[in-house]
Length: 237
Image (cartoon, rainbow, N blue to C red; front, side):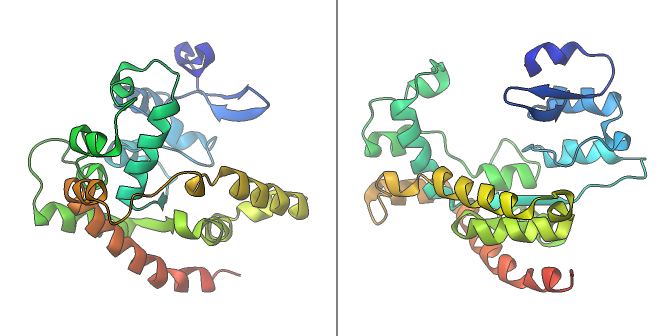
């Protein structure tokens, strides 16, 4: 947990691992977000990017402060994501009991047993449990349409270039050539989608699609939104 920095009393930037810099807060869980709010993350100006699935809780960090955040996301088709997790679980040696139960299963067994249930719509509609409705899907679409810059894993390089332009990240790096080389290498080495079968058009794929029906519809909406948002970036010089 933050290499011991979860007990820090004041907010600060810490250097971990190979030199990467982080703010000493944990935004991956509600308790950590509440701690970050209490430490003044929203008004500190220390974070360039916040990574979290908890959109509504994180928005509270910027409540009653002059600074504001802009939501952006990089989306993958829900079934492709679920199948990628299946392949990851087969080689995972972490010992996590929540994922170890899927190790050694066939893809059909995994599709039947895995607890996949429209997590994107649930988080965006702020409805973590219970049955979803078409209204919840519309709420999720509204969040994407009004609040979020949408990127797609299938168009990862273009998506990252858009983020660079919108947030001005390209202007924060003095050596643009090295930055571009780093980005190209990261995209090439980080894309493992061709390393395993997709199982598209199989029964397992269809089972996972049905479990994530609302998320699949949200993804289709996001693909259209990605095209529509192109005009936003055309206005940025």
